[in-house]
Length: 204
Image 1 (cartoon, helix red, strand yellow):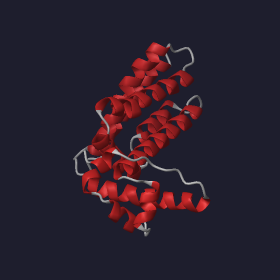
Image 2 (cartoon, one colour):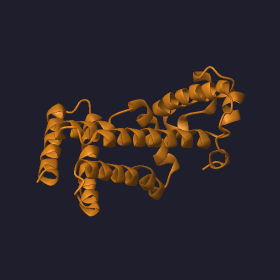
Image 3 (tube, rainbow, N blue to C red):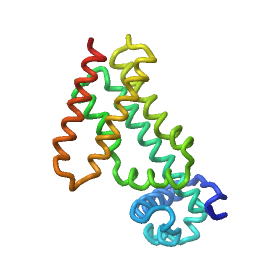
């Protein structure tokens, strides 16, 4: 990595005008990183996309690494918020609606996801990626199952979460293959499989 990537950290704005500027810069960075990836994206292009002076970008994000790390953290926070919202409703949803919600998590927020996941690959080692995304996802899904079935043991909930996350990832990968023949039918089959699995494990 270059010294620019390795050093510097994001600076939080203190005034409303600064917060608005940072939001605009992050919006532009999300678009540029999603289109070009980490290596090809430049701070100059990001500032131009936000219609902001380059100095304004460097004021809040001294390096491209600091900017990309902020986007990854923000996406992780959005994903966690979506998981918590689903957990709050887990007890009242039908199993089909619960599976729809779970499968939709990894397909939601497509722009942020398209930027953040490649940035995580570029910026994080495997352990950091597991902690930021995989472990958080499994823990949250296990919590959803515990809300749905309070008598479920923590160990069973964790095991079920591993299975469900794998199904969610498979559905997400299929969703990304727009030209795949039979994609829609396969997605329906995966969701039906997930519903059947939860019927056996949560309602027995």
